[in-house]
Length: 263
Ligand SMILES: Nc1ncnc2c1ncn2[C@@H]1O[C@H](COP(=O)(O)OP(=O)(O)OP(=O)(O)O)[C@@H](O)[C@H]1O
Ligand SMILES: [Mg+2]
View (cartoon, rainbow, N blue to C red):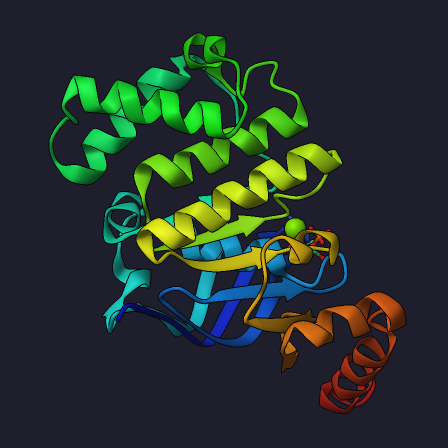
């Protein structure tokens, strides 16, 4: 069984005022087939965690590890991470001018598998995935994300998830800006991917709405760069009702104790 294990992960970014620590010791273990929801206030470092797993060069890893089946992911290039089975759906997906959805997906699939998919089967898979996600077939010939609406971008990401079949996926606010129907369609896509491939999922979200369709096995509360609490699906409801106040004040109190005198 595959496992993605994040241990004591510390990450900083370079700013004009010098390095700024963002992740301050993240511990999180995801097993194949498990769904982990990560919830937490704005600016707590959730996207930073997602980008660090994906290998974005802007984030400096100062300590800790991310192991995929015991192998250090932090030593891998971005390509190697994708090949090893990691997938990131970004909070703000990028446009790729001049590259059609169809070409992009086929190139990605070829790079992952080490050989091009047989054309017939591939076109069938592509069509099936688009129709399941209720995407117009004209999308295949449009440039990646260019002029896509928010919801269309998210559907395109779930399409990648279905066709590229990663072992572990990080979805960063995939539910933001989706209308009720799109939320359902996107959630069904994620659930299909999980059922078909045993996908393990890290689902970053601000809303319990999506968790009604994608049932989390675990909920993690992310505050000030680390996991401040963990529980089952009931924790998400509690957060919705109570907010993050008690975690945020606990983090502020801990920071005050840690801070050097006079700072
Ligand atoms: N270039 C930068 N300079 C200063 N601070 C930065 C820079 N880049 C990121 N940060 C800070 O890093 C922190 C973590 O950001 P991140 O995007 O990971 O938060 P998040 O939990 O995903 O928030 P949200 O829920 O709003 O998406 C924020 O306080 C952000 O302002
Ligand atoms: Mg974010």
